[in-house]
Length: 418
Ligand code: UDP
Ligand code: MN
Image (cartoon, rainbow, N blue to C red):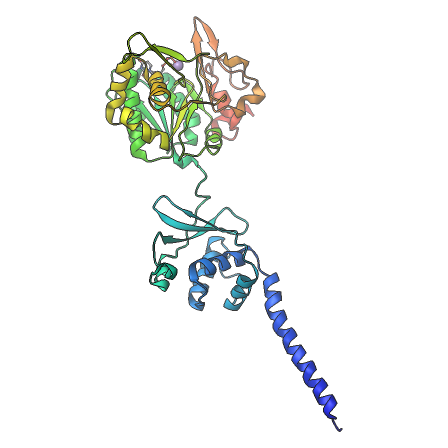
């Protein structure tokens, strides 16, 4: 067969076109097959690797990603070329950069199908070559951290203090230990005024003997609050939440509520028991009055770390008692005085906190699960308790056990009700 020059040229052109098509497919098909993890990789490479290729490190990284979502070894490892192809095509990285609490810049990218995050960190003014650093050394700072959305408050971020007294260990503390305490064992600390080996066996170092006096006096209550505040400061948690020992705390609702506030901002969350601000004589300006709102301790309240740090000069290191003495008011009023009067910051009212100074029986049963705190009391023979089905009044006069089973029916002691 004789080939004319024209046929040879046509064949060569066809082969060249075929080659171009092949190259095009190899890049574009890869791009469309990328999943979210590809985006994590390309983000990592762009931000942390400065476009260099390093197959070994990439493979290590890929395996770590697989380990995180438990699919190790089941997925073929993508080539470096594919990562670069994606890098060129998609500049819309879904990762974010922010500076974390230790002053490191964190690059955060979501991992497909989970709330795990991968982060790469680089110190501020570190080894970015553009900043005159040593370039590749920055890779030493690359690390993979697995954590929930780092800014979302979780139960572990909350310090919960319960004020109690020796005479209530039996009737009140034991009830709490059987109910809501079980949902927050690590977070709850009981502040009391005497030793109790039986309760200490359950609580260990979460039972604190403040050595404050055992009465209901203004001084005794402030003494306990002073200790609570110092323990909170030492805990370094995001939130300080206080309740009395006659309060049922709906732990998941508390966490939900706090997720709506930034602990790095100043927050004083609670509910006043009065319909008007408290008015007291201003000792610094005789004849003048000062007014402020306060969150009643019997309903519970929460204070953000940012605000607590500002309160420390008036409340930390035992100074809470001195401040309480200057205005001669109980502990919860003193807190309002520090926050609203001295720091000029307002109380934020959270309606879902309830003390027994409210008519608790008026809360509708279908609304109970939305409440953060509930309480009980008895005034001149009349019970002020919530209206909830469950155990009999003799078995459960405070209604706390019934409420606990209403909210969390899977607890063992609730099985008798179903
Ligand atoms: N309390 C205390 N010492 C006492 C009486 C009460 O520390 O002698 C605590 C009690 O444990 C509770 C808070 O103070 O956490 C409020 O007490 P109670 O509910 O008896 O009185 P309320 O002020 O609510 O009427
Ligand atoms: Mn009370």
